[in-house]
Image (tube, rainbow, N blue to C red; front, side, top):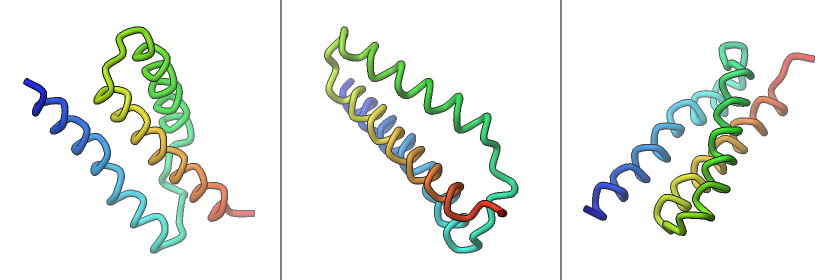
Length: 83
């Protein structure tokens, strides 16, 4: 069922969009948990390394897309942090 992997890719990537849009619109990151995003990044990076063994391109794309979304959120947190 390769379509199930595609559904997973879309859901795991699209789920970040509301938080990213809200953060960029309000420029407020006070409700964003740094620990959550750190654990998520560790999970995506370890998934990328694990997938090198399995060589499943769709799974790799899912991890890479999620990592890109995490990077965008990390950049937003850095830009909009209270100084």
